Each structure stands twice: as C-alpha cells, then as structure tokens.
Length: 337
Ligand code: PBG
Image 1 (spheres, helix red, strand yellow):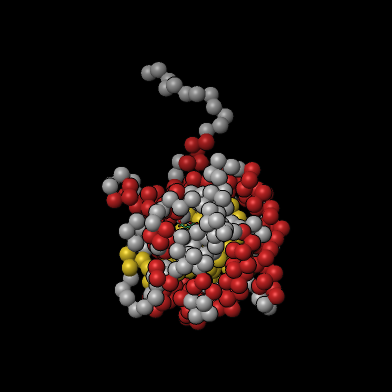
Image 2 (cartoon, rainbow, N blue to C red):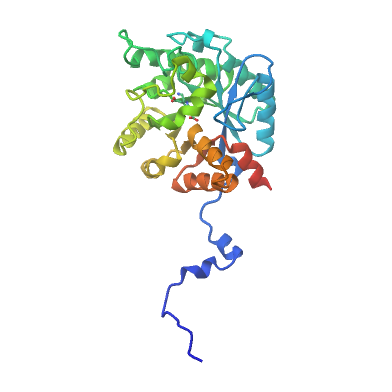
C-alpha cells in the first residue's frame, strides 16, 4: 500500500472549520435584532394596508396599524423605526409647504407611536421629497433648474423642530444640502431640544437603487419619473474621497450618528467611514437592494432567507453599527428562533 499523499503544511485553516462548534467559536460578526432600524411608511385615513408593488411584504399603513407594527417590532427586539409619510398628490406643491403643517401626518404618527411604545427609538427623515410636487428634497431655485441650498435649509430647520416637538429621538436629514447639520443642531438647541439627536445621511449617493422607495412615498409619480436627477446634491457613485469630506463636515457640525446609503454596493465606503470616525455608523440597505433579492427569489434563482442574512452580515462586517433595512422584522424573527 503506497502511503497517501500528504502536503507538508504548517497552516491548515480548515482545522477551525471542521465542525459547527468550531466555526461558531471563531465567528467574527454576529447579527442581532437590536442591529436593525425598520423603515415604515404611513398614510392618512383608516384604510387597509396598501401594498407597494416593487417592495413585497412592505405596506403603507394607517396610523393605527403603524402603532401595531411598532409594538410587534419592539416585542421582537427591534429598537428603532424610521417613519416616512406618503402624502396624497393633491397636498404636494412646489414649496413642499405641507412639511411645515402643525398637524402633519408624520407628526401625528410620531406622537401615536411614542405614546404607545415610548422606549422605541423613533426617527424621521428631514427632507422635502414627500411634500414637493417635483419630488426633489428641497425647494427649487428661481430658474427651476436646481435645488436652492440655503432656502431649503431654512425650511428643514423648522421641520426638524416640529419633529422634535412631536417627540422623535433622532431627526435624520436626508437632503444633502450643505450646512444643514449645523443649522439643524442650532435650531433644535434654540428651541430647547438639546436631547434630540441627529442621524445624518452624511454619505448619500445618487443611486438608481432608490426606485422602489419613490413608488412607496409617491415622489416618483409626483415627478412623473423614477429617474429624478439628484446629482447636484447627492454624491457621485464614482467618488470615495468625497465621502470623507461629507463625513468630516457632518461630524464637525454636530452629527451624533453618521450614515452611508445605499449599503450593499458601497461596502468600501462603509469601511472607510468606520475607520475615519469614532461616531456610530449607520448604513441604509435601500429599497432597490431589498427589491432585487425578492425579485430573484420569486424567480427561484436565489434563496431569500439566506441571501437576506448574508447581505446584512456583509454590511455589518464592513463596519456598520446599525442597519436600516426593510428586512428588519423578518430578520428579528429569524434571529429569535
Ligand atoms: C429621501 C429619501 C430617499 C430614501 C430615503 N430618504 C430617496 C431619495 O433620496 O430619493 C431612499 C430609501 C430607499 O430607497 O429605501 N430623501
């Protein structure tokens, strides 16, 4: 009998992969229900949950159903929700004036959720896109060809104070105007809301992966297209150094948490941001990332549960401390099993 061939190896990394227990022992990244922030959509009225075609399993909810969903998420160990209003097109205008209504849908939603589940962290977007007829995140310049920076910031400051007064834990400016974090911090403090935090969408790219979200809040139908050009304010996907410029500005202006968005296609940026700041880093697995996994799963081409888990593990491994994801509830259920 010839002796079987044997390499003369000092290192055999497979030794630590031999059994499930050994693999568990050397596991580096672990997902927990408390890693997730669930984005939720809210609508007026008492109607049944409205399905969103491009986002299977995601619904626009009336306030009562939203509260129920928040209770369920809290029970599952999800510590935070991000609320987005979907307005009827007739309440939208060029200036997004409905964003500053004292009794706006989003404010009533925040109050209802905070009353029912006080410990649940509630955050809201500070940007005008759910409110503008053109679907942009701010008001337009006189020639209508761009978003006006400072005039938009002036509105967002008021919006942030209204949201703080309604009880949000964090405001999340998602507009990408220059100087908005500092301006919002000062406005909150001046109104006495020193404990309301800011989760800054610091590094938000011009992404085609936002398409399904624009169906969800109706900013696409308002504008008549998914392909709204937001290139004068959101970052160019080709740029990496620019992400660190935005990060430094937002941290300097007082951001408590910084965010990278989208997440999956931008893992290098999440890592860069993680290494460049001591602040907590959030990443937003956006609607298009969610939709593509569902679409492939529906065709039988991918296993949804495993790909969902892997996509989120990758985002956490890249350096995210928390992840906004439409999979939050499903993941929490899976992890609690
Ligand atoms: C709006 C906003 C967007 C998202 C979150 N806040 C869309 C956009 O900038 O056009 C996208 C979220 C998603 O795609 O899931 N300021």
